[in-house]
Length: 292
Ligand SMILES: Nc1ncnc2c1ncn2[C@@H]1O[C@H](COP(=O)(O)OP(=O)(O)OP(=O)(O)O)[C@@H](O)[C@H]1O
Image (cartoon, rainbow, N blue to C red):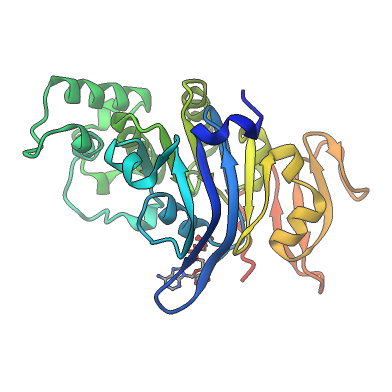
């Protein structure tokens, strides 16, 4: 696993990025971070912190009011043109009533590799077969996507990213609505992709599992509050700044950072100043905090 930001020029690099929506809202300002290849990075922040906006900026969906983003040393436009950026969307972004088969969704990952007429050739069919097999969805390939469970739907979109052979993979809330087994399978897959040298940015509210599988973390709240190796970013003061509460209990990977704890508990609890439990993330916790 690479650690130094020194060779991150070949990963995802944002320098002084600002995004202003048409209504004048500054969703991101002064946003600077660098993520090397061969890493999994968590994108963490409360609702409205700017995580989706950052994804949109990396995918070229929103214009930058200032600053720059480079992907694998290329401009966003060049990286998109070269088909290097794959996106695994949140479930809510997909129209599940759309009549399309699982294998067709995965084939969509190949469109950028096809000619103008989008006629699939053998390498495209092989890539789809391999991607479906890799996420254990081969037996579902002729199902309509609307007829799948939440975890199966996630795996279909992961397969699309695999078929695309994206080197920069953005995953928006990949663990929402999936069971523990599927979460473990997804994490194992992401680790394999990391070892292949790809770069992954994963937006997640499941803080409990971030230290387990994310080498690095980018903490956002309208800007980047902190970024770097997860163990350096996941400090009491950084999490308090990100979530706006008072951290009463905080243990991470056995490293006790506060007195009020249970030795075996790898949990993060954040309370607001008026003692309202804002967030409790334990191992595999499914609780979601809303800081807005
Ligand atoms: N199209 C838009 N026009 C104007 N403002 C927007 C638009 N989309 C998002 N915003 C605002 O920009 C800010 C960042 O929103 P964004 O969706 O990036 O947050 P997020 O961190 O992804 O939140 P969540 O965890 O709820 O998905 C919010 O204040 C939001 O209200």
